[in-house]
Amino acid sequence: MKTALTIAGSDCSGGAGIQADIKTMSALGVFGMSVIVSVVAENTSRVISIEDVSPKVIADQIDAVFEDIEVDAVKVGMLSTPECMKAVAQKLNQYKPRHVVIDPVMYAKNGCPLMQESSIDTLIQTVIPLSTLLTPNIPEAEKIAGMKIETIEQMKQAAVKIASMGAGAVLVKGGHYMGDAQDVLYDGKEFYTFVQRRIDTKNTHGTGCTLSSAIASYLALGEDLKGAVEKAKAYVTGAIENALELGKGCGPTHHFFRFYPSK
Image (cartoon, rainbow, N blue to C red; front, side):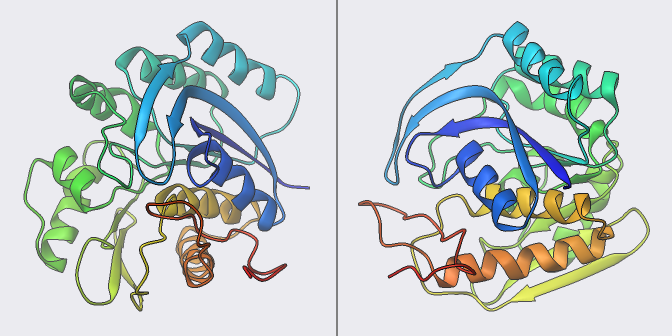
């Protein structure tokens, strides 16, 4: 069985973070493993508090996985502090996994910050160069590229700029636009545009986590980058179409919609 490791924060309400990643990997037929970097007390409406795991324990978790089980792909999500980023980067440099999909999580769905403002420089200098693929949404891409993004052309410009920082490829997610959701993939040479119809629902908690872990899963299963993104987007669209009416805020998607109905 192919394997994938998620390095990210936890979500006790189950819709995002480590929990969403493991559900996604399991749904796609990949054995999921996890390294928890932050414990996040959150639900569908708000983030209450964050407790960061020490860099030593982060490093120890990564060692525990890599010294025992072959890792076919890695997904990296929430990294809230420079110290956390450096610990993860050191270990990824040590083990050099073939596929590293990095979702530069900066905000929860409700807008609560999940990355310290002071961490952006460390993210650019230390983490981004390790990525096979970086998957920022538009607000994240704006922060990293240092530019406003309001058009597809600007999404492409931002992708090129971010790739020049060392990312192997960049997927700028256009879900914050009105109209159909368009994502732009830049693989270092070519652009590819992926369009999915926008689904009218507030229940999109954890979609970024789900997409990045789905891409990592498909890469682990042997898909090329374009194919992995295409299949992952189709999977996420299905999960949103079958989203769960749980909680008082932005409810979670249904990661196992292919196996049983949401109602």
